Image (cartoon, rainbow, N blue to C red; front, side, top):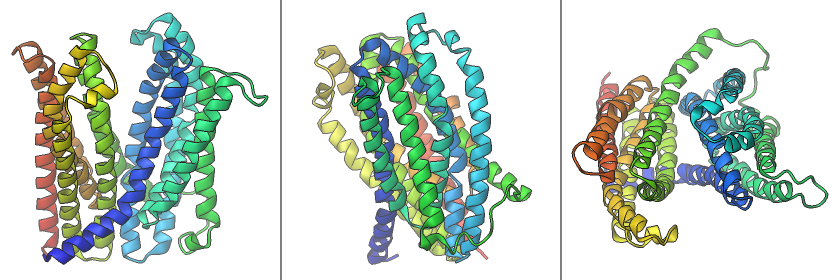
Length: 447
């Protein structure tokens, strides 16, 4: 393939992924704004919100994963110029989002009565419960926003979701300011004010996306069929079959990093603080590759829809190369600044020294993390979700975490051993996922 073709594909991926990346950053800014503004209420409030949020986010991420493959299917319909099919997929996606929300809200309410079993103090639980209950109700608007965003992303209108997300971030910050502190005649709600602000922001974001899609003229060609409570059972089952493995893949990865944090905590507060510093910075660079991965799923799905199988393979491979290159640059920066970056967060020399050591692992970690994130997206564009889920489980839970535990606690490596285990997991996951895309896309080229 010529260099000009590579740069052309790169520009297409950048055009798609740019707004998605901004949207991903917006999601993090909402969490960051809540953390900073709740922090002014004191450590107890901050601990309660962090505890409730950490439980809730597991279910939210799973639900986002279930909905994730829909983007590629809509992109495929767009490539086929079957616009009504895109509307049908949106209709069924909304139905799945509603059903999934009802199920998860019921599960979260049951879980709410059992939060005291998770080892927190009574003061934290008492403060977290009302915050958690309010937050539960933000699940439905979050999934509706995500569903409509999947649709607009799938047809290439990625700026729509970005614009609504920016509005949501601004509203959430303003809502926190007013409701936490009780300004301008509003009641002073303290910690619960942050939950109400987030609920209102997510609700307005969902309503904005729904209104924009259903009333803007550019979407009329997609919404030619009347919506009703009736759904195609076969299509619904097909979407769920694709989505559930992706949701579990997200859980396997998030759960692995949560387990790693628990293991780091066994070494004491300094290693745990160093872990939080490194993972927070690594997560920020990872957001970019998530955007590239979503763009890869759109491009691969679109080209499959056009029946240009060679271009679908080229788009996926180009995205993987871009993700690896970007993360390699980030890795070099982490290595070069490993003694300076921890000082943004702390002044404790022990924490700085441990974090500086971990950043050596992170520098390598970045490359493979980027490759696996983009390759999963490219495979999702081919509607391949089950095997990537198995690969994620095998890499993290069968190999990575046990290896990290052995190195850290039995081989004398210490805290760095946990991160070496994560690095090994990412090397295995990225290699197997890239190999799978190579094999599938090669096989797909054959008549």
